[in-house]
Amino acid sequence: MEVMIEKIEKMERGFGAMIKEIKGIFEKQVEEMKKEMKEERASSETERARGREGWEREKKELLGRIRRIEEEKDRAEGEKRRRNIVIKGVDWNEGSNEGTVKEFIREKMKIGAEIERTHRIRVGDKNTIIVAMMKLMEEKIRVMKEKSKLEKRIYIDNDLTRKEREVQQQSHRYCKV
Image (tube, rainbow, N blue to C red; front, side, top):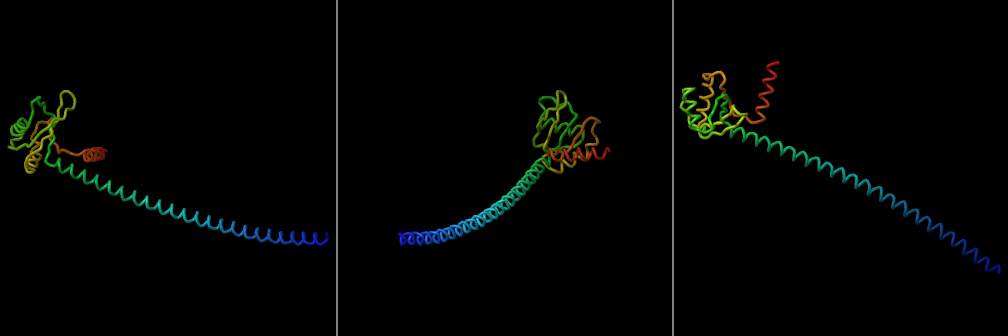
């Protein structure tokens, strides 16, 4: 019996040593896993930061592109309106067209100008605005120089884009103050 007890004690000591060894291996593996997880977390944070930087750079490029496209659109619209004049304060009849506007300019301003096309912009019941495109830029310049010969309530202006009109209104408000 003593021999058996000795064998059991020997086995217990062996088991204790094995348990300590397994526990050491297990703790070592847990530490390695923690270290790997920490490195992976740092790596993913770095990737996310790079991704954010990429998105920010792409956003900045797209905003720049949008601004350039808007500027080009504004420039093209201004170029399209370059030869246009806007006539206000005249009671036009319903059949007003290029011929009517040409006759108005010839009679009131004593200028023989060619008009490519016109269109009406209704502003209320009585007042109508006519936008006329002159055939040549020189004719428009001549009309703009001679517009002071018109009656007091008749106005001829450049055809401005919405942005240009807003800037002009702001400058008029600023000058009045």
